[in-house]
Image 1: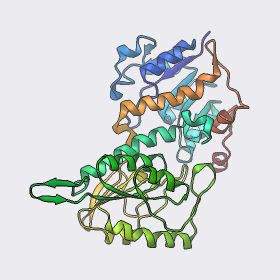
Image 2 (image 1 turned 120 degrees about the vertical axis):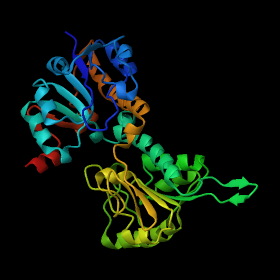
Image 3 (image 1 turned 45 degrees about the horizontal axis):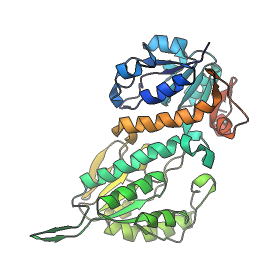
Image 4 (image 1 turned 90 degrees about the vertical axis):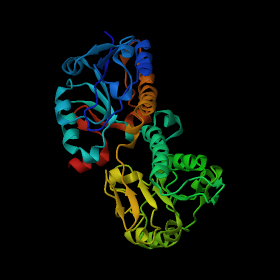
Length: 373
């Protein structure tokens, strides 16, 4: 009997994405699996039921969870959804275990094999499976457009009969996938862009996109393509240099985040006080606390003439392409383990082993296991 894979409708407030678009659902079916899709699961991402029905079986919520061997989700399940999962089934989602320890414990107790897609190791072979990168690309595009909309002036230089209007100066903090996408989009819009990243290796990427690298003299490169936490002395050195550039900016876009931890505070209240009236801060890291000390997650407000925007769940603003990218990540992750409609997980595979959260009645992700105690 082929393995039954299922796509439920997302239940998180404001979530418009769906875990599999119709194209990827069809590709799974071609591998010999049976695909179940909850009715209306893709509507908010603009994928109609009749398109899914060409390859998948449309079912209600209860039937889906009762029959599914493998469940695909975007955001992690609620405790109620965990209770609906079949004991011993497989779950793939962005689980954020550090924020959802009760869910993790229940997944363990129900013998669910769960994979936290954000834990996929950042190695060359896994690039096509990297959910953080695919969704960060969407977020980087969005925050650049958001800055252009909220800023008090034009991004490009305009030459008019009334004279020439100078282009806006944009400072982008963090040159990961989201930051680089923001740089590229702001440059396309005609702005002058400066960017800062504490990893010196980012200079080449920043400059290749036409932006200028802000050099603070601080090097905090760490393993896995991430940045380590700065010392107090390094933070002060960073702040002293950045403050001058932030004060001159028409818009500041911050994108620095550390998976599983609170976002580093980079733009201080004092920096904001020295910014131009009419300037804007777009804090992509708002969901994990924000890179700006004054950010309020989910809110847009004015402080001393500066507009501070803390958007959350940014990829949901572009649900169709974000869903398609996420679905491709899932397919690239799981399809090598499917043969003749059967799922055989290779626990010797580094990608499988390192992205697993629970398996065999245990929490197999060591940092989460320590948190649970």
